[in-house]
Image (cartoon, rainbow, N blue to C red; front, side, top):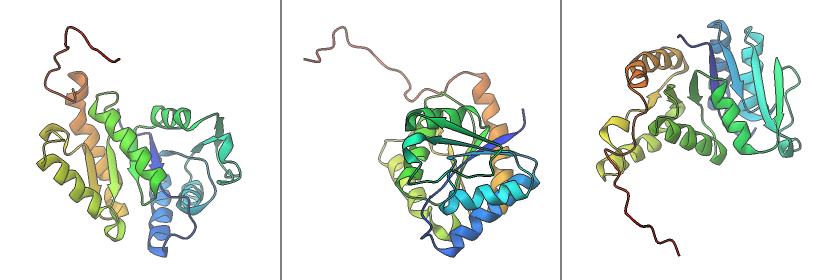
Amino acid sequence: MSLKSVCVYCGSFSSAKQVYKDAAMAMGTAIGKAGLGMVYGGGNVGLMGLTADSAIKAGAKVIGIQPTFLNAREPEHPGLTELIKVGDMHTRKRLMAEKSDGFIILPGGFGTLDELAEILTWRQLGLHHKPIVAVDINGYWTNLRAQVDYMHDEGFIKDAHRDLLGFVSTVDEVLPKLEAMRIDAQGTAQGGPAPAHDHVTEPDHLDRT
């Protein structure tokens, strides 16, 4: 099955440098022109709002998913195809994942890192087989890529999981990279979940007192 809808994780701060704002607008436009739907956090601020604005202008159906407690901090976007209000962050992230065929990681802060870490861990554990691509605009994710390599070299990430997070340098590369990773993942998905470990030996008794 080809990509139909993509999830975008990105920052909500309007203080982001212009190079990142330009990339967010270009990403939204690319999503719309490709005939894809977009799922994101529902806000109308920062890169979130810019990406949604551009995707809508380019003809995309955009779904926002927003916890009610964020109403004051991240005002909801008024022009969305659908806005889903939820009670907590966990539900938000679950629905975003369920409604998407792939994940795009634009620059952002702690929230974006949280979303990336969770969706990447779910991929490692075989809970989904959807592609994940970080957009390394202005070298923003270069240190993250180096950290992934370091974690691998130190024995905390298996060879099979090292490339579950794709990296590209430009917006133009994002959708082709997602599609290529989607095709590559089909064989893994058909074979069942990818285990985090080669094998796990359960002890006869666990003392958690």
